[in-house]
Amino acid sequence: LFLYYLDAAVAVASPCRRTCLRTVGSSLMGGSVPMIVKNSVNAESPPSDLLIPTLSGAKFAPEYDGQWFSSGLQTKLGRSRILAQELNPLQQVSFFDDNELYYAPFLFGSWKVKATLKSKVYPYGKFYVPSKSLIQGSPRNRDEQVGQSTTYDLHYFSAEDNAKDSNSNANKSSTTVTLGPKAKVIADRSFNAISISREYQQLAPIQEVVWDPRKDPTRLSLNFGSQPVTDDMRPLGPRRAEVYIDSRQSEFHPDGSSYACAEKSRTVTISTGSVIVSDTESTTEFQKIGPDQVHAVNRIAVYLTPNPNSREGVLWQEVRGKAVAFFDYELEMQRSDGETCVKTPKGVLQCV
Image 1 (cartoon, rainbow, N blue to C red):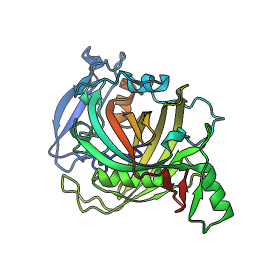
Image 2 (cartoon, rainbow, N blue to C red; image 1 turned 180 degrees about the vertical axis):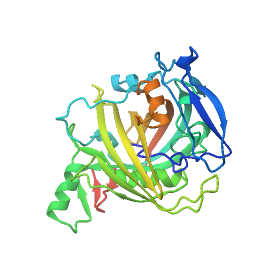
Image 3 (cartoon, rainbow, N blue to C red; image 1 turned 30 degrees about the horizontal axis):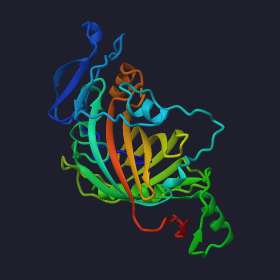
Image 4 (tube, one colour; image 1 turned 135 degrees about the vertical axis):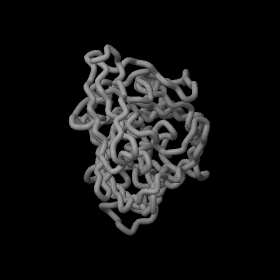
């Protein structure tokens, strides 16, 4: 959809500096949030986190940055995911469904998108957020603030015609497509990921995306550009990420003017000396305003990962696997050209 990995600064785990925090389960103190006890250590020592999950789990105690509510959602899927105050991970409805996510035919083409961050919500408080960058900024950019807007391009093309073009004529430069009610329109994940990364000025921008929707649409490999140092002056070194899209759902409104979809993915970011796993979910409802204009609402949900040997894994037990942060966006989409055309990953221009 709109996010496959966290901005590089978000995905960098800060080592222990002058002071580490040793946490003791508040079940011993009768509370619901672990008690933090400062433990002075040598600056080179790793953190020694002792965390015991409480019996009652984390309490719903939301902290907000920006108050926002979308009352115009048309689909059950959109309302259930975007308006939820607490959110369990998206589940695959049927394992017999197609592994690809097919979009509404009215999204076919090339779009200029203006995305505005409307609010940030931490359902159980900021204590449970896995990175301070998700408090200071967002998953898209470590410094993004509520109210800021970013403009980028998105491509959606016909998967059926793309397969035909690949099989029939490798040198074909353009083709005409027919978009029926059941047309298989898919997102150009390669183009979209690079476009969003570039326009959000991410710390280590995506330079290349390896993705073949005909072989496995649920798997992407991201190669990042080089960046000398992070904000705390540590060298990043070479980085790559493997993305696994493990759940998806979609819903068409009966009148055909609205469409909602959701995907959950796990990203494994690999760099020199570290492997970082992050789980995110993106839900979007698109509403057709006119032939060349679409309004959309997008929510990015961030989950903790269930590693039993880490502090994050224990916090995951506290929140019972639910999302610990929501980032809500409004999107205004305008066609990039007068005609309904888009270039596929193979370089073929598709036009209606």
